[in-house]
Length: 240
Image (cartoon, rainbow, N blue to C red; front, side, top):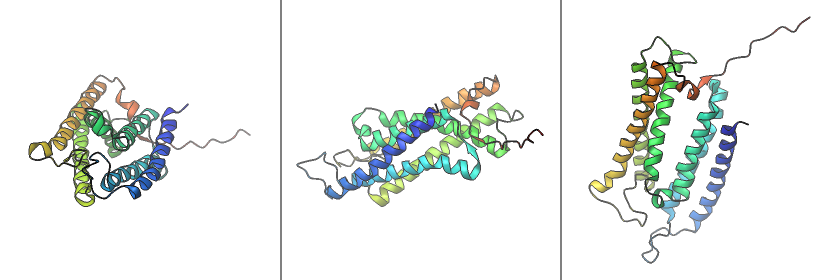
């Protein structure tokens, strides 16, 4: 059984149903916080949830789109990790408020995402060189430095996305305010963003070290997570 595909379908269905639930809840939520009910969610909170679920649904559709347009194959293990990450980040994190209720939930996910982006960086090396495996003529150090920098770059892009969404939609993706709506000030307001970038770096560094050992000593660990193009089936002439 392809567990990556099974879990992906389950996560997709969960996010899709969450969009309907959030749309209904948002219509019934107050526009401004009520001092008597400081922890009741307002429309702005549901806007963030709705945005995240829509992004999650689009992300779940992305592998199928890449397979059709680029003939790209995502290993089942990588697909499983991708689906579980989206479930933990969007449904548990935003919809079920794990970011507020579970200590260090955001830190754990950002560390994990840094490692996943590092693994994706190894795949990008393959595409740039039009091969299914990491080219042996490239220095392992060069490959892991590229993968590390690639992961950090995407981590920065994500923080820019969060900053832009907070500015345009008045959300709280960068956690510059408490769940009650009370804004943080000074260093506390920067803490979430900087912590995310630091743990992104640590996750990418861990994957880079694993990748270096795998390439240097031909362990084959990285190859199990690499995205690759589907090979066209060779035409065979039926026996006469």
